Length: 412
Image 1 (cartoon, one colour):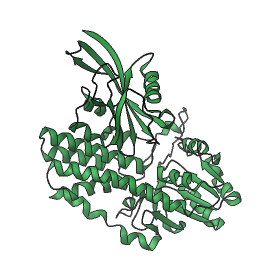
Image 2 (image 1 turned 90 degrees about the horizontal axis):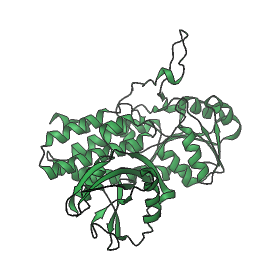
Image 3 (image 1 turned 60 degrees about the vertical axis):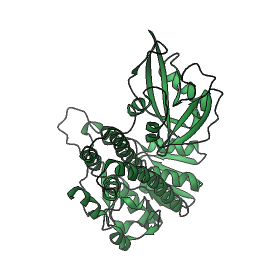
Image 4 (image 1 turned 90 degrees about the vertical axis):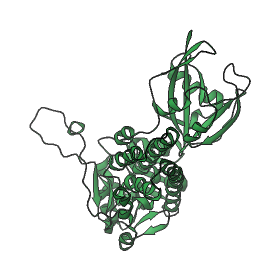
């Protein structure tokens, strides 16, 4: 039996992936659905990018999320042992330019794979790079909105497999609990997972269906919040850290200039600055300690994301947010936090996670390190919190912090 290495790339836009139907121009599996795929000529990484460009023309819009070890697929009919290298890319665009190897294509939520005639082991290949409890827990590169959507995908996918395999409800509920609890500083993760479980009946099919709906609703809510914020942004803006919702708002508003604090020690602001610059916006990266100076001279709006908004109006976000908000108050300029309403939580306190001491100091002196990842900034320092429903000031927040009862699903 011949052994051949191939790559399969899943391009994800929002919570949907691109499935392509193979045409009669290909040598194997004509008429079946798959991902963007091809022989692993050169290195698999090079082949993945080449195939995305060649088959669907989306390479410039694609950003690698992760890859996984190859999956062995024995095909006795073709006398081939395939070694499939899985890849997952986030994709900014859905404008596919198919080549002659593709008869059709669709953007679908991944559980659709389970209902189609596909190339061998397509679901297993997707599952190797799909969101899991571990990947949601370990993600330090993205904001809470992005991470919460990945958590929803993990629950949706687990429930879809359970519905197909006849697994019991409790096995899915256990995954829901682990996803709900894996990012305690991000209230939107628990809110969105709890809403799926609270709205479903005690069946895995119901959890799957509610999960599919929740994925679509979450993407729509985050986009709507960004659009609301874009309408309120001035000509010169300061932002910090990495919030996907804030970034989308800035790209939509296209202000004259944006200053981005680098957000040490992880420096996630660097990627935001690069993305804004690529979007044609005049962008300046500044050290965190310069935020007060920048705001006092050059800025008319401070815009940040939020990992959570507490019931008393305090905004939980990357450390440095309080400094930016204080500077905005002193300069008498607008300061907004933008997030989906699902980030408003009933709690009034949050456990501040501490980052690794080694990220700040790894010398041999007897030096203690204080490296908080998040902080709660008092709501009174913000002009408003911007959500998909419009703006909320501090007095409005407690009224809409109504998510505590969603957790009651776990007591049924």
